[in-house]
Image (cartoon, rainbow, N blue to C red; front, side, top):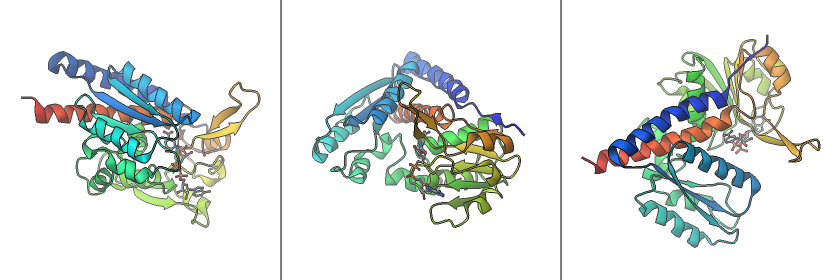
Length: 298
Ligand code: NAD
């Protein structure tokens, strides 16, 4: 079997066009522009490139983006003040604090300081809790992007067995919840595997859908799959490659060559989950702006 590629770039473009149309409509009819506030601390090159991609996507969708860039040695208090400034800013509907933060800063304290009403990453305890009890909330971008991909690629999840590899707060746990909840793109039977799982292949071989979010290349190989399974590869791993100017290439958690021989559908890396994650950030920022309009405008 040669798997069909789920083109995340194409699906993301499709969604971004829909978002841009809604942004244009808001501007024309309500004179309001959705705004994203981005806070970046330090000079980590990967974080810088993620932030740049998010800001570009914002601009392309017609949204406002406002960036605060702080030096590595910024104190936690100064950072908390910046977050509070954005909490109070009526032009900012969504706040993104790029992670990871420098070691001397308590990440949880910073996330907790973001107003849940502007938490477009869906990381605050309030939004996580609301998600778990199916109340209105901002869904975390990567898991939500994965569900949107499955829906838009025509993958049936209801009644299927999904295996999630990884139990992190930002990918594994929330995507497991979204896959199991009784909603479109959910209603699956979900197994969550992690570093404490003795025989990963035993579980993945029973899966109709595998979500690989381990952060390790070659975690999933073709012999670990049931023929026809759908594979969503979340991993982003930098593999040293001297033939490239950057000195590295990106690879997912799935061994693409063998997996694509057994799976029916697979997402590439790059060009799979990544573009969908950014798109869902735009979606949440627009959603936040719409909620503001609903509460403040006649
Ligand atoms: P993490 O390190 O916080 O969590 C990894 C999880 O995988 C852990 O829960 C661990 O128990 C599990 N794990 C690791 N090795 C395993 C193995 N051999 N077998 C079973 N389980 C194993 O990572 P994360 O933040 O969840 O991210 C996972 C990957 O997804 C990373 O490569 C990250 O860069 C990528 N990511 C991509 C996007 C995107 O938008 N494309 C967004 C977030 C994360």
